[in-house]
Image (cartoon, rainbow, N blue to C red; front, side, top):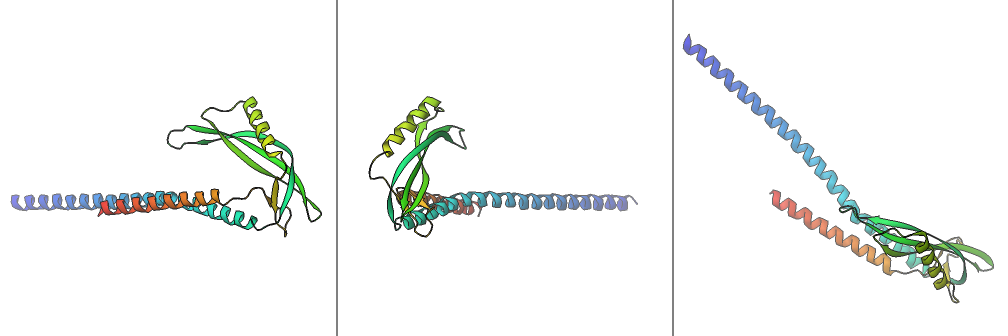
Length: 197
């Protein structure tokens, strides 16, 4: 009887240990699935960042390239307004301020009046510009564009679509930044995958 009782107790202990092992393993699997899901989501958002750079850059490149083929007409600056904006570093929280001046112009194409506006921004620094500094920059930008020979490109199919000083440089630079970030992401992904093996 004593031997039988000891055997039964040993069997119960083994069953409890196996049950505990199954629960622990099951919980580990659930955690692994959850961790993998979160990692996948984070990788998706990280991948979207360079793709957005490439997408916006390609769109800007196409628009400017298209505008370079539009007719060029003289325009006159009729007014301007200005404000400030900032870019914030996601890691340090440091702000870089800019002064944004929007120029308003008028002209004519094929006997039809046209009008529009364009934005010119200049970096200011880490301190928010005062109203006097914004006004000073607005006047300086206005004077630089109130000159003879200023032109705009006009879409002959839709004269409401205009572009002043189209250039492919900025768009190309944005695409290259996006490609660089994408290559960096792919290399980082491969390195993490190799470390996990």
